[in-house]
Length: 87
Image 1 (cartoon, rainbow, N blue to C red):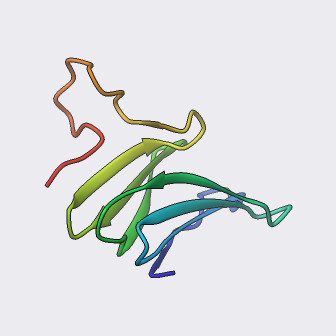
Image 2: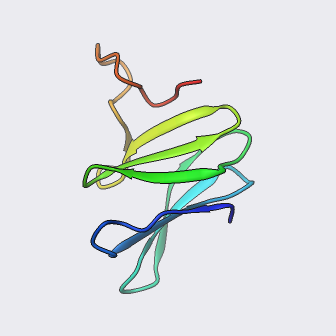
């Protein structure tokens, strides 16, 4: 793991690594689920609001709604505020 961020309420721990996988851990149970996979690894994670997660790697910035498990905003929307990937 090369990046970890703690949820504001302490209930979730997203972690990213050199393999490009971001996993989110339930702090109460210790169980993890894979949130996303990207190319070239992850070197930083940060919370955005209550359910957004930003992860940064050499290829760009990735934004996800971790509760829905989807890119934020979803691909194909007309929003121009970051998308799921931005260099």
